[in-house]
Length: 393
Image (cartoon, rainbow, N blue to C red):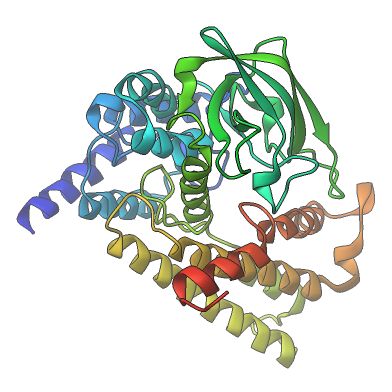
């Protein structure tokens, strides 16, 4: 305990001295993209934390981490929250593909890619779903054909989030079309800067275009950038999905976000539109709804904390589906509550709309995707039923 207290004291002192004012409070958290210019304080914060090993605090030091134990990691998260410090680096590099390489990669692959992820030296997109392979992911048809020391990739992926800003993409490809569909898949790492990769943004109903379709036309991947072995991509890819789902749930300690809870402003917004001068919400159904939402939010936070404390590995197994789904449903409930409180004012669009109202509406529209991204609600319920509760097929 004394050692942990000493670690807390040292951590608190270091954060106070090294976290710039511009990296505290709400704000942009870098994906590591080379095409997005960062504010000076944000860039400085990322660089300092990367040098400390705290962009990926539980990773081995040899790969850019700090080798923190779980208890030390929890203390770091608590101290970051205390001063309102933003996560220095997020994205699929530190939270999805990095942990997957750490688990399935060769020593050469770890040495090559993990420091890149830890420094935020390039953002990553995720190439899983296809126009003809969504929930039935194993039906994917994007091909990878061996040609000497390279694989040649042809096909398309859809819902490749943030692909317009990404430098790399990890892709599930079919390497053995003659094998059963689950057995002929591999996971490869693709440089998106080459001529054979083209990204087409998809505009959403909110007006934003975070999702994209990514096309591969004879794109080249070195043989050494296939992760986990040829035709073993289904096993590797499923593990990566556990890292993704546990990140969405706030319980992935192998990256930079595990245990972090994003503060919501649901209560403040609801009070703005429905409360009297004392702050009391006048409408009884709305007050009851808000009370239930805050109870559910607190229960979710405690569940996240318990899940992190009980982890025996860097990411939980099938339990991540339960925590991810409950988190998504609660967030969506908060969005519905805010829109209901705004009433007709929450339906305005364009120049006539108040910025806070328009932001809330766009957030409500965007976060409908939370029960689709990382596996649909139905997929998560099936996993919970079979793998967590042990129910028969």
